[in-house]
Image (cartoon, rainbow, N blue to C red; front, top):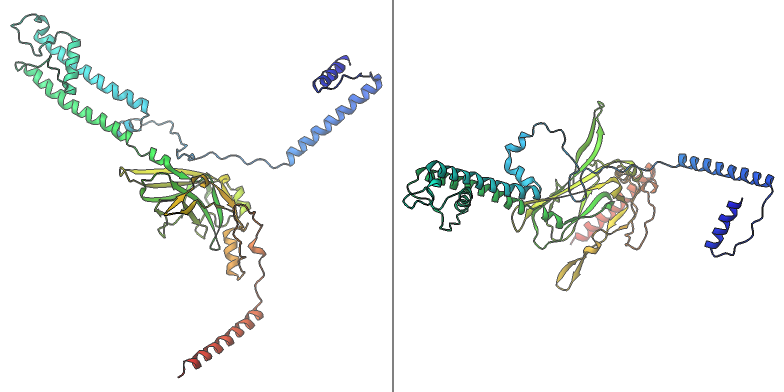
Length: 442
């Protein structure tokens, strides 16, 4: 109890309250209070456990197949046939990281110079040039070559065509002339290969893809009485992408009718291949639209079903860099949690005096819009049955959407009513035709 009093006094001191006198309770009252507190704790624990059981489990975060920056999240392991990399040595060297490329670049040149320097020193040793260094009557193979270091320097001067003029080959050394020819040819091959690798690696258009933007989210809303999946792309540079084209893939697991499980199955998403809308003139940001029709994998998915699905949409933008003519590819992806139902993109293009201006601060901005909750299949069926599609009032980014379900539209007219209306329209048509005929008479 003394400990309880001390804790209570410490709490009062921390809160700025004057310490109060703590009265000591009788023993039977203290035991009764402890029992009551234990009962309350047990009930709270049971209530918390029941709440955890009733609550719906959180949706598991899907592992990305392609990162937002375009890097493929796939690692190749247990590769047995590693010799295949050496069969395409040039591509292997280009694909290496910069630190390994620079190391191999330096190592190849140093080894090449050392190898030919050793051969020049070996020729001088066999001919006896090293024993007649001070003999002016002796004609060496290479003048002023008196050690391995001088042979190494002569190898560097020969291959890099520096030519200081201090060490020079003489005409009375045929083996030296042959070695000079071999080093010149092999040196040219090494220069072509290594400089070519570095040039291709520097000029790779991977960095060009850094200025190609994809919206952070994809949206689903109505366009021309049809549900559409949309995302936005843009180019930050003034030098444009030539012959730009875009395509999309749906990545999700699938099980066949025979029971075969296909992980990460790829399905094409039509974003204008048949109409030519997939070929872009990417001068200003464009909204890429996929019409959800009978051939779309989202044809039978409503908003509630879409939230339960696990999938990933990979978008690929390709084209040629205008400055270099090399092919560039930019990639991004959208998880199922990044596809928002009932939204549209905020306009970013405005007309200024004499030009159009793009506001990239609003590139990723979206706003809510009135969108049916049903699937595209149900929406198309309601339109075919004669139900009038509600006129959706356009929303601005400051307004909020109203819940709308096309299935709640008025029921279609009965057959007698349709027949009566058809007869009335026929009579009106005949009357109008007679009036037109009378009007055409002279």
